[in-house]
Amino acid sequence: MKYLFSLILTTTLLTACSHPDPNKQVDEGTVKGSTYHCPEVDWTINIPDGWDVTTKDKLDELDTKGKEAIAKTFSGDVDTKDLKHLISFQKNQFNMFSSTAQPFKEDSAGDYEQQNKALYALVYETFTAQGIKADTASGKETIQGIEFNKFTADIHDPDGDIIMHEIMYSRLINGYDFGANINYNNDDDKKIMVDAFKNSKFDKNYPVR
Image 1 (spheres, one colour):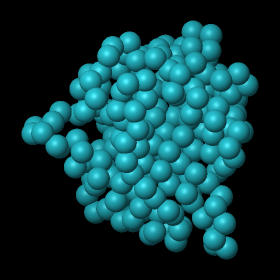
Image 2 (image 1 turned 45 degrees about the vertical axis):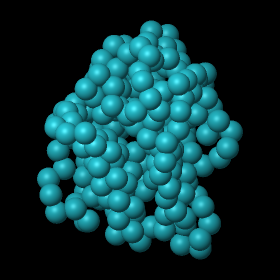
Image 3 (image 1 turned 180 degrees about the vertical axis):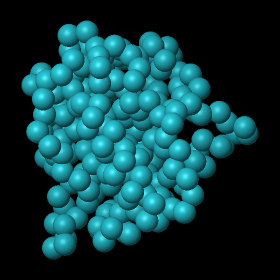
Image 4 (image 1 turned 90 degrees about the vertical axis):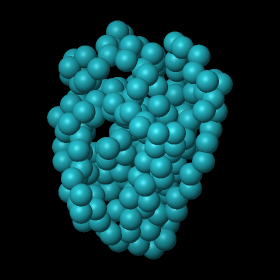
């Protein structure tokens, strides 16, 4: 479930970063210097200067907490066994970019879009179940000629002030449900992460859906 990881980032504070071997923190792809490449989805992105690759231990911890949060609103089984963590990097505990890929096969036209709508609803319901007010919106955005699904959430504190933002991009690529998720609490770090994604390269020309 591609939004499992990004969802819990908005409800859990991250601990301090360390500097482990970045290639041991990803399930697919490789990191060379500040560049990450994943051949499974034909994707290359540069890690911003001064940002740290998020550790696999932290990703696994967030997955577990995400499952626990979703279980409060969803009675079915949350299957993440095929979910692959690609590159994730963060500046601090509030500003983080993450990406995932999970095999997905459409049995009929529109299956993928229906899954996205169901997941958007689940994300909103999970926030609500935890007593968190969130303003959400969904749509499309074309980046370098490639159309992505886009979901946004503004998270409020009990006084009504916005304390966290989230942007989720997704699209089918090479039989994978690819997701890029951005969590931020200020416009400067948002710009760094959004620019990193919008300047990243997909090696093939995917048609607009």
